[in-house]
Each structure stands twice: as structure tokens, then as C-alpha cells.
Length: 344
Image (cartoon, rainbow, N blue to C red; front, side):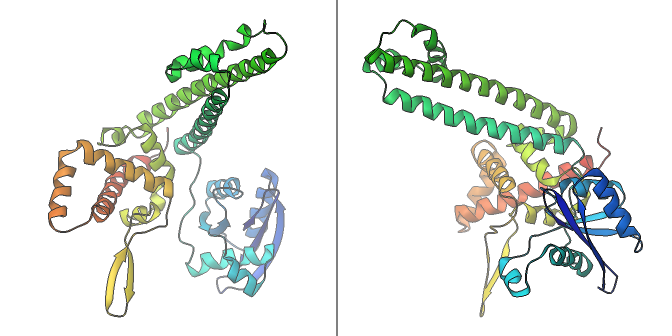
């Protein structure tokens, strides 16, 4: 399927690769039912390749999985290939089907119907609130730089918490300012007050969402929180990468590749070596990096390993890369048995 916001185009292939039919359906509940019914009219449907299973094709993927169809995530085709072969929605749908038929598409789609999907939505809202709060703080401090010297002196030396509380009360205090210079000062007070209250509101949102995420992890994957270096935020990031159906990951090596911590073979003539994997889910990669950095500070076993490998001539970069791979293996074996059970 070639997926879009309002409509999806589907192509059905026979087992020998013959195009049986191509059709467009609306991206609605009725459209999903009609799409599957149309496909089943040509025979038994066991597998489907869907472009954008994490975006436009997410709802369609969930519907097909619920109907017993194995759904595979199909990567968007590169521009060079499209320039060579042409670009159209039916052609993209056909290419998606051929990817599944040939075995090139082997990554099974996430079900997106359990606690991990809930965590993903909460984390999205939290990250957005954190970003907006940081922007508001920067704007408030930028306003202070240009503010009246007397006001700057009054607020100088205050910590962030006290500064925001003081600024939040400036609006009412500014009502008696006269025209002229006072008008600018009044606008400054109003702006600082609005920004400070926005910061407070966003901080409350962040705190509420952090509590929701922590409770989700404690309920569905508490074993992760017992591991050195893993807190609720890191645990959520890794769970989102695994998904609600971790059985789609065949081995710890596949999870390591998904996180971008598997070594990549390189060779040139007789020279063979391994380079850093720059692919995979970069947020999961960053989460594993945070685990390793925490362990290097507080975990004696990790510190001992680091010292031993350093004496062997390994660089810090190489040691950290190995530690991230070990962390990925540990997380995979902790999460997969628990998460593969039916969600509560």
C-alpha cells in the first residue's frame, strides 16, 4: 500500500509477481474494510507491505494486523530509483508489494495498540512541552536583557524558580505606570508576566506527563527500572523502539541494529574493519548512550571493564560502542519476554 493522508492506493500481486489489480481507497474505517475485502476477492491475503507504518499508514496497519494479516514496514523508495523508473501511487503500491514478496521488506510493523503506544503519545506531548518551555525561558531572559536597568537590578541574582514567580506577578504591579517611558515598562511587565505564567503552565504539564510515563513503566516493565543507568524516560524511549509486539524482533542482533549499535563491516582491498553504525533509531541510540555514560560514573563493573579495555589499547569511542551493544542485549532480554504477553 502507498499511504497518504486522505487516501491509500493498494496493489495485489500473485505469488509469481503478476499484478492482479490496483485500486484507491479512502483513509477511513470503511475504506480499510473495503480495501481488505477487495484484496481478499483475489485470494487469501496473508502478508501486506505498507509504506509509512509510523505515520499515514499507522491506522491501516493496526486494522490489518487485527484482521490477522502480517504487516511489513516498507521504506520509502529513494529518489534516484524514482527518477529512473518513474513515480506514481500505483507504482509505489506495486513496489511495496514486491518488497514483501521478494523478502526485502522483513521488518514487521508495530501493532500500536498497547501500553507502549500510550507511552509514545505521552512522550510526544512531554517533549513538545519541554521544547516550548525552553523557548519561553529563553524569551523571558532575552526580554530582561533589554529591560529597564532598575527592573533588571530588582530581578538580578534571583534563581530561576524565584525569577519566574516574581515575573508572574508583574502584570498587576504595572497598572499604575504613566505614559511615555512607563508605557514601554508596562509592556515589558506584561510580557514577562505572560511568559512566566506560560513557563509555569508548561512545567505543570511536563510534571504531569512524567508521572504518567513513570506509572506506565512501573506497571508494564518494572524490571527495566532495576537496571543501573535506566530511569523512566530512558525506559520509555527503548520501549517505544521495541513496540507493543516485540516478537517482531527475531533476535538481540536485530534489536541492536534497530538501535544503531551493531557494527558495520567495511573493507577495501585486503583491509577489513568495522565502523560505527550511523543508522537505526537515533533516540534509542541516545538512550543507550545515556545508560553507558551513567554506568561509567557509578557502576564498578563498567569502570573495571573500561580500565581493562583501555590497557588493551582500545579508544574510549570503541569501548563505549561495545558497552552500548551490551546494554542493548540486556534491554532486549529484559523487555521481550514480558512485553510479548497480552497487555493488561
